[in-house]
Length: 226
Image (cartoon, rainbow, N blue to C red; front, side, top):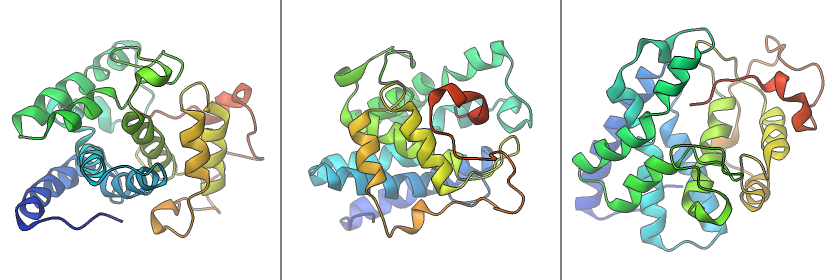
């Protein structure tokens, strides 16, 4: 649940929420994406006993994490096909551009760095700085998990939503590779949150014929998350 803020903070948050809604629309999410990430990220932050100011920065970062993509305004973001290699390289610039744009909009330095680092991987193969393990702030590791789960369980032009169980299986399969295993463990312990519910149409979603248990079955999870 989003925490209560002062009147000044609430006014600022409303402006950030408007930015989040515009980004969601640009990225063709059919449901509120950024606010869903913010809620799940905050639930995880509470699991790790974060201070209120750290929770606030994490929520803000979740709301504007893809600000760079919106500013870049590339047509391929909305396309219903896999990205070409040159497009993939180009879109990876969105984390640095997002950091810069967050600064221009008066968001604090912690938020700026979370926007920059929300695509870093636990094993060091993420971007833009190839940080690994504890080099990646815990807040960024939390945002990585929450963002991925929400992207998997919502629909976009090029990806059908998957079920809650399938998305959690993906997180488990990539724990220790893309995700901090402890964050995944904490995420799997979350319950009774509406934000965990998948938007998958179980009758139409034929992506999986059986549960995916290991990373070797990665081809079944060939989903663009950027």
